[in-house]
Length: 345
Ligand SMILES: C[S@@+](CC[C@H](N)C(=O)[O-])C[C@H]1O[C@@H](n2cnc3c(N)ncnc32)[C@H](O)[C@@H]1O
Image 1 (cartoon, rainbow, N blue to C red):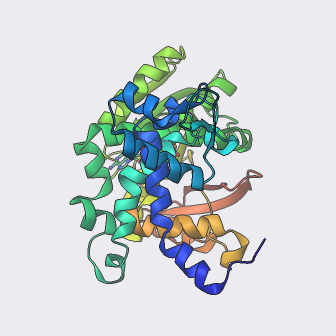
Image 2: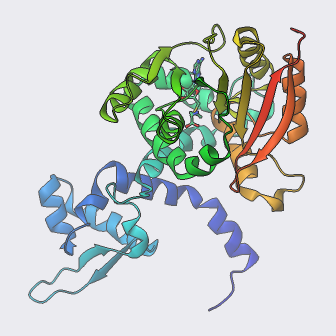
């Protein structure tokens, strides 16, 4: 195989947007689902869905170039028939671990933000806001289908790391655990399932907890898990023994993090603990490229950032909280355990 020249490398990097768009389109429109049975021609798919046959054919050809689809001649037909490759199968929405929601979310909400990345250098607003008109959380509130897509993806994505996090959570002496910005509830559900003595509070924006309530009911956990629609800049439930903030602080700049942590500090009983559950930014990018990419993603989409351990320690201290220990999970997340330091800032 010939090696990619420096010029080819640059060209491939420039054209990366095409791939995000094509994969996202294939999931968003249901084109992938149309290919998940026996091989079909572009014309058959187009007829089923009332799509343009030529556009369907051309898009399938693009997916084939990307290795997501394969085509073969079929007896009795002059048109090639298309099927998913092993990689394409990962985009089928019903497959365990499917990447379908991520592909749709990336096209719908992330690509627009990234497309205005230059704004980050000078702007008062995030690249996402420059592209879509409002900060991301407001956008998701104003476009419920965008919020539901994000929450569904988050639930699925969190589920893949949750076992290690739950195993690392020390719930000794804990009666009531409050998951702040708990999203669709993946973490609190797993904690309640693993520790039957626990009561939970899932606290998030009102529309988000409304969506989570149905899932808690379906799992038979509604009587053990209260849901509270809150704005964590304004109020935090005051009756917890253990507070969780997973993948929340990385969404916000330092000033907003201090406001959130300040609300937590004000609300939490003196003997309670806080677990900040985040990835840590490495000293050198090569140690953990994924977290470095996520940091850029935060720059473009939420206006937040990934942080080093020292940066989290400082944020906690500035909010009247002391970092007491760092618990490894064996995965990308660390549990930063903190408690009130006795002095309200
Ligand atoms: C990146 S998600 C993390 C969700 C969950 N902890 C997880 O790891 O799966 C951040 C969460 O913060 C919530 N959030 C954003 N702004 C909020 C606010 N002002 N008050 C309460 N929750 C908020 C979002 O709705 C979202 O569920």
